[in-house]
Length: 527
Image (cartoon, rainbow, N blue to C red):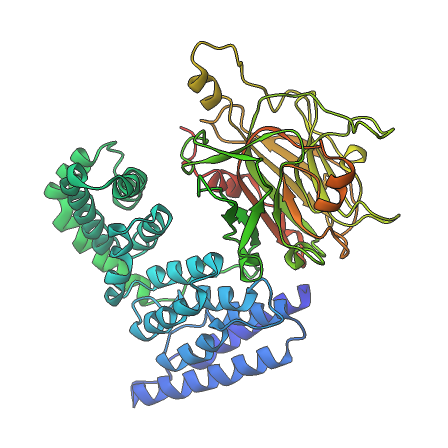
C-alpha cells in the first residue's frame, strides 16, 4: 500500500505537468488535449490497480489534478455507480469526494446530482454525494438543498444546512439567513412535525452562520445586524476568495482513505419493531429488529441527540441487525471504532441461572461468535464497577478493560428524575488497531453529557484482524441470538442511543482520533 501512495504522488506530479499551459496559441485546444491525456493516464492507473483500495487511491489522486476540465468529469462519474464487490462503497464515496474538487463546475454538479437517485435507500452514500454537491458549489443546486428545509425530516434538514454551508460564503450566508427568517415567520402556525424540524435545524443554521461569518455573536439578531452592516463587503471579499480558490490547485492534499461508517443505529423512530441502519451496510441490512416486548422506546435521549433512545432492563431483549452468516461489513477489520451513548440504571451483572460461569458483563454490542473453539468477532460489555471491557476474537472478560466508574448509574430516588437521567448520559468510544505497536485498544469517555470526550485508557491487546466467522447478527444490548438462548440475561440495564461502528480492512484508519470523536459526539468543541 505504501508503494501505491508513492505511485499516486508520481501520477499527480505527471498530470500537473501535462495540464500546465504550453503557450497562448490555441489555449482551449491545448487544455483539451492535456485533459484527454490526463484521463488516459488515470484510466491506466486504475487498470494497473490490484485491489479496490488501490483503485480508490487512483481516483483520489485524479481528483487533485489541476486545472479542472469537463472532459475529466465522466471519467470520475463512472465510479459513482455501486459495484457488487464493493460492499462498503469505497469507489463511489471516493469518486464523489474527487468530483467535489471541481469547484463551481456545472457538469460535476449535474453528474453528482444524477447519482443521488440510486442511493435513496443508502443514507451513508447518499449523504456523501449530497455533501459533495455542496462542495462543488454551483448555483444550480440551491433548490436541492433548500427543499428539505421545508420538509418533515429533521435529519434531511440538518444535512441540507451542512451542504449549504459548503457553498461560496456569500451565497451560503444569504441562503441561511433567508431560511432562518422563513422559519421564524412560519413557526407559530406550523404543525408539530414541522416544529420538530425547526427546533432541530435552527441551532444548526446558527452554528453554520457563525462558522462562515467568523463572527462570535451568539444570536441570529446579532448576526443579522452584522450582516446588514458588513454583508456587502463580506460578499465582495468572499467572491474574490472564490476566484482565487478556482484559479490554483490545492496544496493540502494528503493521500489516504477515510474510515467507513459501517453501521449507524440512531434509534430515531421512537416506536415500532425496527430501527433504520444508516451506515454503509444499509445496502444489505437496511434495518435492525427489536425483540418482542423489550427493549422499549423512551423519550429520554442525550443532549443534541435524536428524539428517542432504547431502554433495556435485562432479560432477553435485544436489537439484531443481519442474519445468516452475519454482517459482511464487520468481517476482517484491521481497525475499528465503536461509539455511542449509555445511561445506566443498574450496574449489577447477572450470571445465567443454569450455568456454572460467573457474571461476565452486560452487553453493549456484540457480533462475537461464541460457538466452537475459535471465536471470531467483537463484543463490548459493561461491568458492575462502571467500566467497559472489549473482546476481539474472544470473550470480553478476557480482553482489555477500562478504568472503573466511567459509566455511572442515575439516582432513581432523585427528586427531579428527568434531570437525573438527563445528566447521567455518557458518551463513549472504543477504538481497536491491530497494526499498532502498542496501545491497540483505547477507551474514551465524556465525564458529563456537555463536555468533550477524553482518552482514559490506552491498553495493549493485539488480537489480529476481526475473524471472518462472526455471529449471525450484530446485536445491541445483548448477546447474539444463538448465545442469548443459552444465557438470556446478559442484557445492558439502562438506556442506549446512537450506536456507530467505523472500520477499515486495510489499515489503522478505522481507529478514529480524538478530533473525529468530538465530531461524532455531535457537539461543537467545548469552550
